[in-house]
Length: 197
Image 1 (cartoon, rainbow, N blue to C red):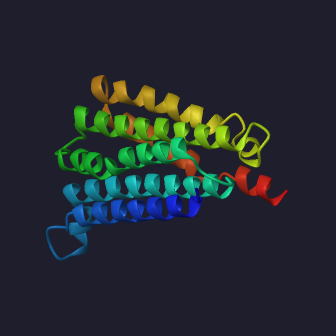
Image 2 (cartoon, rainbow, N blue to C red):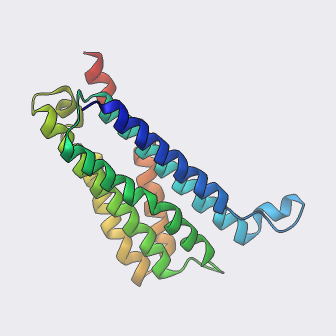
């Protein structure tokens, strides 16, 4: 099966998710610059920004993985749909976390956001392993993925952030979510280097 159809479908779904998120972004109350820093609008905008960065990171890494792959099979198709399902919950989790933050972020919505991020990371890991299995242990993709240190650190950070959101301070969890995004925001050149060989 051609990977082009899988890429095109995934790109379309991700574009729709970004559109949904921006459409759910509330406009500020007022017509001056002060309205942009009003708490309700600012929390919504920052939540949108964080989620947009996450979706962009997944899109970028998804593209790199598929570019390093020669073909897909049924397992990969289902693993990709699994990833898209969890990505499709990002707009919901973003809106819930932003809309319930009155004076402070709330425990359960912030933890739910982290659970969605964790499940996205797990789904991405499953897809990556399915692609490596299809390509073989000596493939360019397998060499590019390596030990996936960033992936393992991300999973550990999400697992730590969720109970922090529930039982300690949701703001600490959001800081961890932002740190994970920064870890991935720095471009991962492994695939590009391996493909250039």
